[in-house]
Amino acid sequence: MLNRRSFVLLSSFLMISASAFVTAQGASKPKLSASAIQVALLDVGDVRVPPEFRYAIYEQIVDHVKASGAFAKVYRAGDKAAAGVPDLVTLHTKMEGFKEGSQTVREVTTVFGATTVDITASVTDKAGKELLSKKLTGRVRFFGENLGVTNDIAKKVTKLVSAAYHPGA
Amino acid sequence: MKLTIALLVAAASLASGQTPISGAKFPGADNRARHVIGLDEKMKRNAMGSLTVHDGKLEFKSGNPGQEVISEVPISSVEDVFIGTESTQTRGKSARVAKTAAYAAPYGTGRSVSLLLRNKVDILTVSYHDSDGALHGAIFALPLGDAETVRTQLVQAGVHASPIEQ
Picture (cartoon, rainbow over the protein chains, first blue to last red):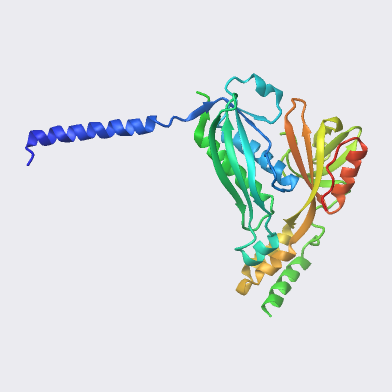
């Protein structure tokens, strides 16, 4: 049975250890930092996808990332001004799968007929080193055009990137 | 019987409307189009306007006379042109009334009414580089059949266009 003094010492030790552990956990995953990001055009690889989907995903991502405020500057693919940014990172998206659903089926059944887009989103630095990568799926299931799936996937990509970055520090 | 009731409700609603279902999307003069996304930042998404090819450029003009917003894309900067189709919902007052009736229709019969409110449109995608070299994918929705006309005009003006997929 612990006496009072031992109990106080043990409690203090446990509290100090716990706070050190929490601090260490928080410090082990620092947020990434960059002042600017360049959005590359979606790489469709061998997946057959309507061109309007490819460009709509690209445009939606540009819009959403700009609106997120996570970066001071967002460059489109090919923008010559991006070359002069020292801490520029590049957002790549690669199509892994695409299933064009039927709006008619969606509206009749409300359950089936979803259009789905599977992509891998990754961020690389100027040297090409991969800083982050994640598979994401976009869906449109409810009443709406098929192109609505591009907005869904763009929001998910933006959420991923915004969570990892904050304005250049 | 239930389907008949729903269709009758929708038909009655539409009869009081101003525009028919099929023509509600692009009323007005020729060259009408909707800018979905992708032009320069001054052009709003889903802006209705006119899309024309002339004097070595693709021009989209939106807004009332005297307050127009114009976006121009030099033909020389266009990388490719694609055509597709999309099923989209009819818009406007008549459509809203019919959709409300559809939601109120019993036993799920409203779903079939919603099917009547869809129409097909052409999707024209123009990829181009702006003056900074930045890539844009400008996407337009046009009345069915009109995208091929614009594509032909662009090709005649010197643009490379990917083959139309059947």
